Each structure stands twice: as C-alpha cells, then as structure tokens.
Amino acid sequence: MQTGIILAGGLSSRMGQDKSLINSNVSRLANELRSAGCSRIIVMCGTAERIDLFDEECVIDSKETLSESLYDLISQLSGKIQLAPCDAYLADADLFSKIDGVPTDDLGNRQPLLAKFGTDNQLRRSVKISEMFQDIGSCEGGIKARNTNTPEEFKEILSHLN
Image 1 (tube, rainbow, N blue to C red):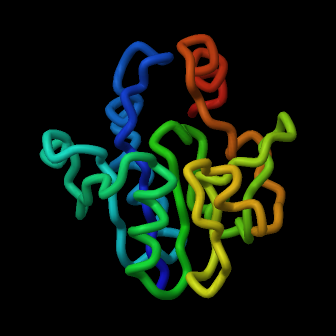
Image 2: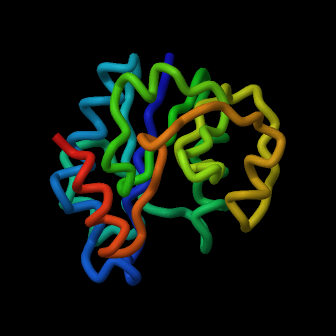
C-alpha cells in the first residue's frame, strides 16, 4: 500500500495567504497522488480548526514541530509513503511516479517534503526536517519539485502552470 501525505498545516506567513487554499492545491495534489498509485491520502492540517478546510482524511499535528509530528504519523503507517507539501504547485502524477528518495529541484535544493520512501527506511528522529531525511538518497525532481514560499516565487511558478 502507498500512502500520500499532504502537508497543509503551516501559517504561510511569508506568502501572506494560506498556501494550502491557493488554486485548490490540496485537492489537486490528492488527485495527482491517487493517479500515481496512492490508495490512501492523509492531510496533515496542523490544528483542529483547519480540519474542515479539506475533503480528505485529516490529522492534526501531534507534536510541537512538523518534523516530530510527521515522524509520529509515519511510525503508525506501513508500506511506501509519498510526501507532498501544499506549496508544490507544479507537482503531478508524473513527478510522484518518478520520485525514489528525496527529489532535488531545478535550483539544486533537496526537497525532503516531496520524498518517497518505505516505512522500513531509517528516518532520524529530529526537530529539523533536513536532518530527519538525511539518510534518504537524492533523486532528480526538476522544476516540478520546487516549492513556493513568497508571492514573488509564486508569480514565477504561475508562468509554468497550464
């Protein structure tokens, strides 16, 4: 079984608006994850107040940091896991099908929040996402693996959307 986990609990303070609600991206990502073979989709929505924002199965963050909450959720699952941050506006089923590890975007940045890995992989327990996925190898992701944190970055990404 392959589980898709969409990360949609952040405050989006640098973006100035809730990134998970832009372009209905959580619903779009859920559909792309299903097309790529995920039979279960879970949205990590942050707080209980955000559960009603999403149509998918939601879980609230169980710990203080995203890394600790994600580790806690993954420890309850088995099989393959495909992560998808809500700000991966270019990620699609084609990208998800090709990921094997932590993808590197077109700027050379590792994107651990788009990682695909088995629950038998040894993730490091850490408060930092980068450390958590340190032992998972990299793979090619290209521009589709790029995330978006500011209005300027989103404007650039919009030029690539169909």
